[in-house]
Amino acid sequence: QVQLQESGPGLVKPSETLSLTCAVSGGSISHNYWSWIRQPAGKTLEWLGRIYATGTTNYTPSLKSRVTISLDTSKNQVSLRLNSVTAADTAVYYCVRGPLPPTMTFDDWGQGILVTVSS
Amino acid sequence: QSALTQPASVSGSPGQSITVSCTGTSSDLGTFNLVSWYQQHPGKAPKLLIYEDRKRPSGVSNRFSASKSGNTASLTISGLQAEDEADYYCCSYAGSSTWVFGGGTKLTVL
Image (cartoon, each protein chain N blue to C red):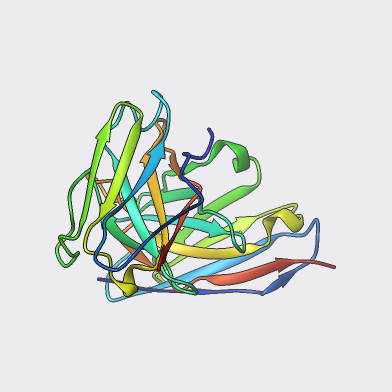
């Protein structure tokens, strides 16, 4: 079981770019899928996208134009960028190992980081 | 791509059984045998309970069981315990390398 730790600014201004990093320990980011999932306060989970060790990405259609997920294999880190943010992007953002074939489950989760979009 | 539909809340007394439903469409839950269920306690990250519609990972209590029929999946918790009070989310592969979650169900143990 790997450990995941999200980090980044807790406050982002509207129209700016949200940037988060996930440090992976206890395992390599190679040979795994990594996702970002967010959860506004009191609301449900929303899968944002995933990246494989090769750099191949998939994104949820509604956010595809604004989301970028990337890897830094030298640092064993996964990153999320979400541009042109609004208050609707305020949420806890989770870094997650998965979905893991063939079960397609989200197995290991970070503790989450609250990002507030406000001027 | 819409969220799967779950009841907002369910409740039960200790020792009883409850069932949480999760309704999708023929484009997601009804086509793929890839429904998973997650338990989330307040302030914590979700935890995997069920995968591939009905399978339990090692370490998950056998009080948790699940099934699926058509476009509806169900999670049953038997022998309710106080520690089961949490939010429960279903999740399904939705095709085209995308995933969708349910709206979540808050379980109250009376």
